[in-house]
Length: 225
Image (cartoon, rainbow, N blue to C red; front, side, top):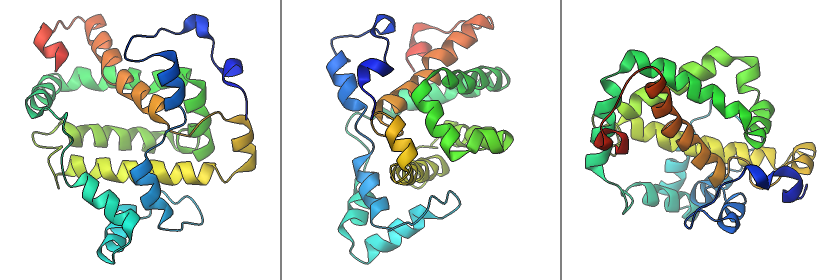
């Protein structure tokens, strides 16, 4: 495993009281423990993106498996920090600019390619290289589902898809860590918390920046949403 100092150019890094260097370095080694334990309980031999992992985890939970039950119970209740009014406001803003959203979100998607650790994961799964149109279409469908009014409510399509993505990522993490060549060259957990934070930034801050460059001006409240 390579050393962090060989991977990160600290001169290009910016930190804050909340996101300190030490905190971000720790987050590189944290995946999604609840989902990771649930996927481990499936005893998958290979990464299979087409498998119904959510259905399999729910079936295991019904049989009493503790890891599967832990996941099902954890996702059955909303997190304490959830602000439903802010979610609804954000959905309304994006749905008001559907045509421009396609262009701005496309920029967000491809901008992820500048993050070396993320591209190692994407390249290993072959999702963008082998069939980029399908990957982009799936990402667009996912975004569309979570933007629908109530899309993130329990049992809604956006919520269900989010759970499937969490389990898919857990399966990818488990599979990649079994590959000797990948483990030798990679630092931290595949699809770790910093990667997920980076993805949120791509589809929030960078998306808003793209809107601004396209001439759209949002109010302060809309930007917050």
